[in-house]
Every structure is written in structure tokens, then in C-alpha cells.
Image (tube, rainbow, N blue to C red; front, side, top):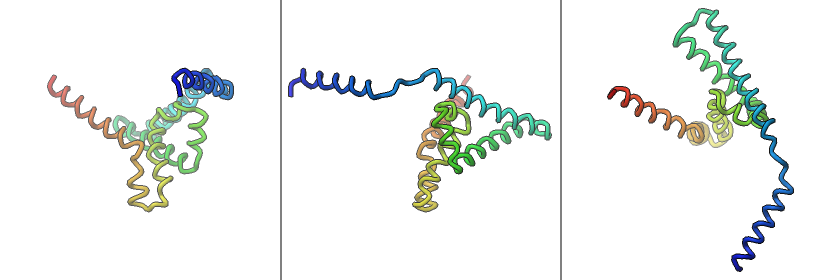
Length: 149
């Protein structure tokens, strides 16, 4: 097949796809991501105020809020609600700490039929593993640089 026919068929195909593909609603998607991400952060702030009122402060307060948000993310993932939130909000549901909890919990739930060790435990960090490794590695590098300065 000649090069000219391939280029011509690719253009036809791209035009065909463009006609069938619905237009992306960028403003709506950005607004949904901003709204849901802000709502998740507002829930975290609410937890912070309530725990501060209960007497926690400093690192204990930050840790407790993080644990509560992770628990809520895992619970909503287990109930199947977080996936629907993610389909609506996109990156607005992925960026906060609850999105990280979702990325650990989803594979654990999906592969539970393969057993606790080879299913849940082995597959739990398929998505989140590289993030954890990169976070620890970059933390070590920053720590070394900080010690040298």
C-alpha cells in the first residue's frame, strides 16, 4: 500500500471519529473537579475543627484527620460510591488523600477472590506502590540535601 493511501485513510478515519465523538465539556469538568475536591477538603476541615474542639492539637490532630479521611475514602470505595464520585469529578476526587485511599482499596477489593496473600495483599499496591516508592525516595533525597546544607 502506498504512503498516500495510508495518509488519506487516516484522515478519513480521524474525520469519522471526530463526527461520532461528543465534544468535551471542559468548563463543566473543571467546575465538577473543583467543587468535589473542595467539598472533600471541606469535610477534612470539618473533621479538623471537631477534633480540635475535642482537645487534639499538633501532630495528633493532623494524623487523626488524615486517618479519618483515609477511612472515609476506603469505606466509600468499598460501598461503590467513590467510583461514581470519580466518574463525575475526575481529578477532583483523585488529588486529595481520599483518592490515594481509593487507589489502594480498589485493587484489594477487585482481587480478593484470588486469596488474601496473592490477591488482596499482592495487588493492593499495584497503583499506589510506585507513588509510595517515589515519595519515600524523594523524601530521602530531600533529607540528604537538607543535612548537607
